[in-house]
Image (cartoon, rainbow, N blue to C red; front, side, top):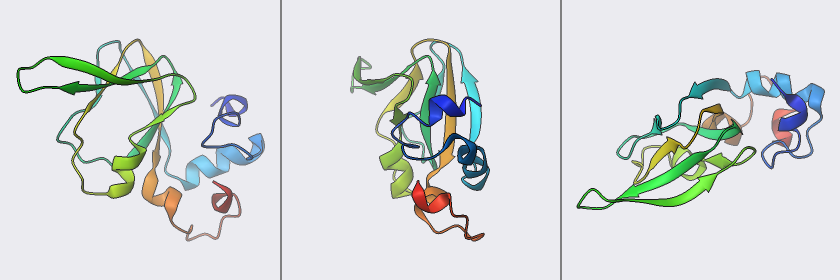
Length: 127
């Protein structure tokens, strides 16, 4: 994990590099790779994890009634997506999240990010 990169993202701003690894375990973080065009999240799903683009990029895509697609937003390395939906819990996505190139994504459990750590982890309180 590139903790130097993560320490420069908005999500981990102000966190020291050596603390990030411990935080990631506490927050239930995991990484996944996607090929260009692969769906990361699909409209109608409920999600519990926000995504942080480590490399590549993702598009937030909306499909209309006739099947036409519109790119609503693009997320580049260092940016997060699905944070609102993951924080709301059981709300279904109204958009698709699709890798616009080969991409590496870090997923973080939003519930663990927003609640107090059961281990009283000092790093967790600063996220």
